[in-house]
Amino acid sequence: MSIESIDLTLIPGSEALRLRGSITPEQRAEVLAAFQAAWATIPPDDRDVLIQYWGQGGRAVSLVLIDQFPFLLKDAAAKADHLGRKLSLNPRWVFDKPVWDNLDLVLAHEIAHAYLFATDDPDHLAFAHDGMEQRAWDTLQRWNFDMDRHNELIRHVRSRISGKSPPI
Image (cartoon, rainbow, N blue to C red; front, top):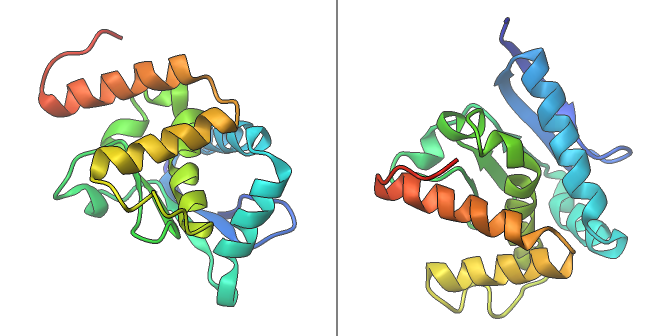
């Protein structure tokens, strides 16, 4: 399997969100399918808010696949930066089951954080880390994502971070 460097537009007709990284063609196809599944579930009005937010001033948010730097101090499967303009996926996590099998939820979760930044949600940053996560979960639920599957994925990620072997 050959690794290739990619820089692709994710949203048809918009330069607001790009996929960048070094992955195999098979991984690229899977990431694109996962993004498309997540994006299609988000209500159109909320997608418009995100596109407007990400495209401000000609800037584009990058979904960085092979980028361990954002995870050096705190391990996670994925994260949105402090403004929701850069979404990063941890290469040590995203290509392993069960995270890979739920990549649409991983992407949707980070997009939910970006949406909360885009709408200046007053409760998104008002709480400690778990409060921020709760607001993202609330957004995913409003968007009709499968919260049972999401919560199982979160349990897996948290148990992996804590060093306990999770059931797969």
